[in-house]
Image 1 (cartoon, rainbow, N blue to C red):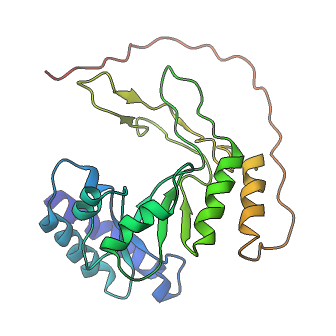
Image 2: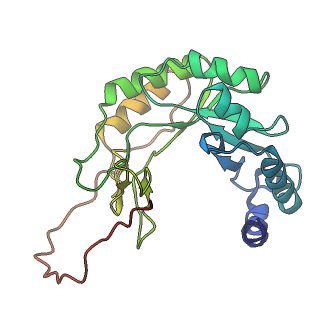
Length: 242
């Protein structure tokens, strides 16, 4: 926790001038992410984080948490003094996760802070794709409830160096390392190009809000840079913990 406190004492003061209350673009700050999925359930830890965030950002800011939609996750990942949100993707009737959310957030906006228009890739597996039609269908259901949505991811990205991470655990067959690309089959690709999914989502949103006018920039031109000779340095070793 001392390391967390030191890190936040550097990071959070850089964000404070950019808060909405100070005329900046940051409208809310997330305190923890899916902490309710962790094996422990430590409200004292969550309270400490809230104190640290308020110490550096003040109290004129929306601090929130994000968790999956069941009682245990929301109980362990949230606090009554923090704004609570849930995450889920297409194929889930939004009425279900929002009904769980209301147990812990009786009032205020309904928010899906991670609506998944795609998914991440893993080594030795094919590139993940998601059809645009069901994404639009379930986005429509959420917006029809007058709920708010944050898309994860709206634009694909790239994880440089060894920051790509993994899913699962090293001591099980579920260990799934991720490649450098975080394209995510997002509405905007890793290169920033608009996709069919982008335009379908825009049409869905236009049913509920005014879409800003103006043309959408076309995809950037791509080039082949030729072959690159690679030299093997070492193998990737996965050490199993027993």
